[in-house]
Image 1 (cartoon, helix red, strand yellow):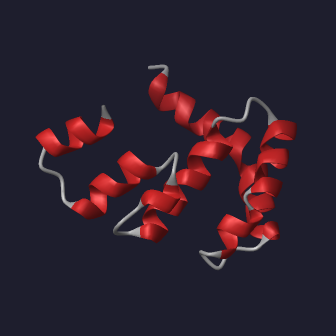
Image 2 (cartoon, rainbow, N blue to C red):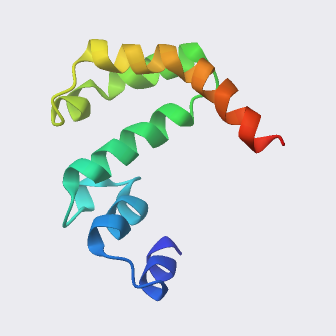
Length: 94
């Protein structure tokens, strides 16, 4: 579905690949770093709570390392998720 939609919009590959490949970043043909960033963000945002997000971050350490991010960097991101979700809700729940 995403591939069809991005194709019908004629998006450039640099935008299309993160959308289409974020569940399977190894399939990216271009923009692998952008795809990996979207993949990591997708996995972390799907976590139901802080404990689940921390567990997910542990499983992403190797993938994050391909971007030059450490396990500590991921941990810092996980700690910021609740506050960021709160800020986003101010715009979503208007």
